[in-house]
Amino acid sequence: MTNPELEARNAALRGQVDSMLANLEQQTAQLKQAQAEAMSKVGRASSPDGLVEVTVNAGGIVTGVTFAPAAFDRSTPEKLGQSVVATIQQAALNARAQADAVLTPFTEGLPDLPDFFPGMPSIKDLIPTPPPIVPPAPQARQNDDEPPESFMDRRGSQW
Image (cartoon, rainbow, N blue to C red; front, side):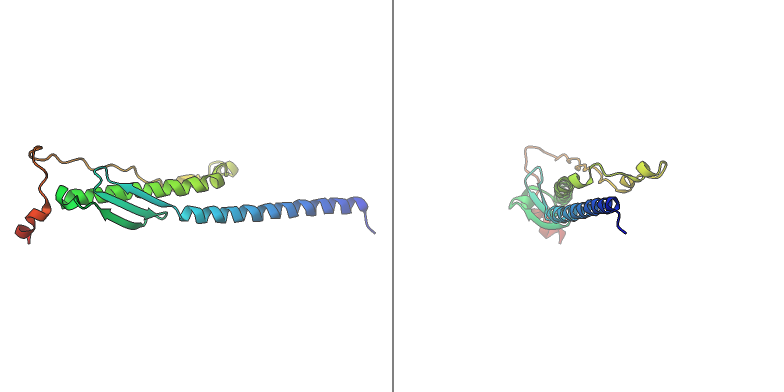
């Protein structure tokens, strides 16, 4: 005994499920592609004085550091170290912003726990935001008419 109305409803439901599965497969493929693209992003930054250039990957791992030829003549080790750190941070933020831009279409509008369960903590609050980059305060030179002393000139006396 078959009921034509029941068979029609079952066929319609199967069609909906098939459509939903096809849509899910398409969205999964798009998300995998977006994740791969996000992970391929590279952040680059140069120090304000142009003495340091840094490249980082999407995970924030430093993949390259370049010093200008005059870096050791125009700076001290302490200042150069501070410049390297600040430039790495800027490059990492650059890479993160690029990766986030690729993934934003997939994360916008997603419901959060409090949407389903009032009073629950938000998952979004569990994701730490990177601290702001605060460049080191410039140190005043003794005499602005003279170039900074190079640490290369002091090498013999330090070692």
